[in-house]
Length: 231
Image (cartoon, rainbow, N blue to C red; front, top):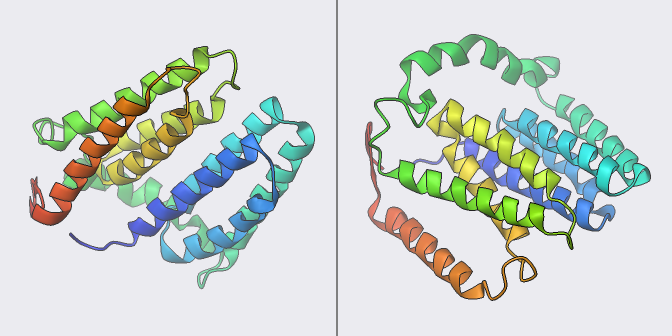
């Protein structure tokens, strides 16, 4: 196991999504914590533009499903989240770094460095993690469809958009699979309280959670193999 600064992006991404879900369900003052999160995020890892994209989808869905007034408040908060990103030692250079990286170094890395290969790259197709990754994506997709067909609760447009964003990101490189998995779990939590959609679902949800926890514990204790060696 290697500690990497991207764990902060994983953490902040989950926090941003959780706050957005809360705001879309029941608007509150919680949204005003977001600028503080971005002030930390920009100084710890250059993954903060992903948070901007998530906030943009939340504003759009709030405008459609909640109210224009609440959407305006969330939009104002989003603007603050963008502005506070200038509070870093490099100023504008620090804010623009992720964009510059994606246009210069990223294409080279996708061609020559395995971390930036797609999970379906010939070198990675036989990786043991791929079936679990696809199973998690399929499970989330099923929950989205079930919730979307339900006429009692609001349509999960925000979850749909986040699902598409993260799926696209995951397909661009295996380095994004941890963030993808964390986000899928958060989306599942927001979608599973669906007793009205899938009655008596508690037993299979608990069973699946136990299985996932067991696999995570196994990897944490005994490690796992990658093409670059054991982890």
